[in-house]
Length: 624
Image (cartoon, rainbow, N blue to C red):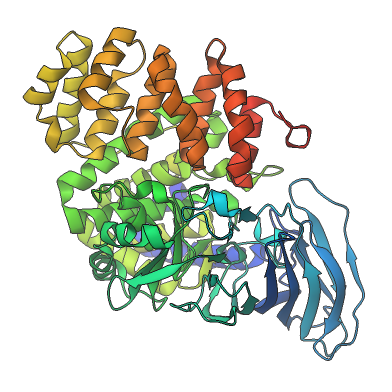
């Protein structure tokens, strides 16, 4: 449709594009009416959930949440059946708001989707109450013993609902095509604090009872809860940080520029619409770098490098307050609409706060990583528009959605000019706020408002990177790359350090240096590098991961103790996955990897454990 439009005269073309966009908008609405939606049994065109109220008790001994979920409904004429997603929930009864029991039934289990819950509604039923409890193995919940926390005094609980794990702790319409407001009453042990993706307390109370309210409608994957020995410190008028007591000061120092980031983001693309922006640093088993739960970003402690060099992650999660949380991908096949936009926005925030030289280093590392991953993926999985039918949506969490999406949007910026592009994006976020968007609707929106002279479909519906991928120039990383090549050619490490002034390098310089070194280093070269730069002893997780890849490639035994330690002390999938893959490919490495994993797996969240199970050929139910 887009290609044909370019052959029309300007007047007719504008009319054609407007009609096209209106039709695609209708398509986006009809998408919600599909039966079933991708990765969900929900039928929101018949009955949809508009508000959720949770009343739950947190039981660390039993490792369960128990209580009720009250759902406020919007019903179409003649609709008498509510469909919800569940997985592993123990449901005791379902009633209307007056306590009258309603008939309900669970469908046959599906290994990916769980079980659909169908509830028969009466003519006047506009609210239902589901009484249930989670099971100890609920995939969204990670229950940590005191020994698995930093303080080692109290247990800890956190949730991870994205992509389709909300259904393992809340009966809901678990699809990004449906948005709802929510409230909650949560009962926890009195020595612990509970926080959610909602308006939060900043101090622990003596009762252990906490109430929450989220007035902005969100999709289910943004439901979030954390319970632990938490304290709070403000970062500014509308931002702050939660962490375990011994982590708090370090975390607050690392995030000192958060208010500057919020201000920079608002100047770019309009007001922040979520009232507060707080961050909670979770224990090290958190499987992601960050999770953009509204009002409360969940963050990994692996970004606490001590030099603020890894705070691009905070810029990324903040950017989600516009791209993803405000305008949301309608299905997980459209995942790039969340993440590609967010990487682009992240880069613009980093440029505004730290300068273009700094942001271009990030862009260059992203481009290098993207090109490498494209070589490893099936061609169809390198399209921006994904096809995740019959698959776990987590399969789409590759650099394609993030970095190919970013470079697609950067290409559009460079095609039409930054001034026009920024005005377009600001209007895009404003006009589509609190709505879901499909890839097709977005393309027609672009064609209607920008009319770029570029082949958009080659990016969205084609493999790899098109020829018009933006060029990234960074003298900083070029120098780091030259340093690596000189070392490989025989220049001693101490001369590299002085000639290239490595004492002033950022994490990003070291990442590029280590990745440029690549495979083929001798043991003597590894020893020389380690002696000069102390890589094995590094406390920077990003540098450690790249160094350990070289440890595995070269068989540098002096680094294997750190490898075991690193794979055991943190559970961030970004680091675990490549290290286990590389280790399993080496002679004798699979045995070593399984040996490490045997001890490390109990400390991983299910998201990471499932990935590593597949890499190592491990059946979780059978052990190692």
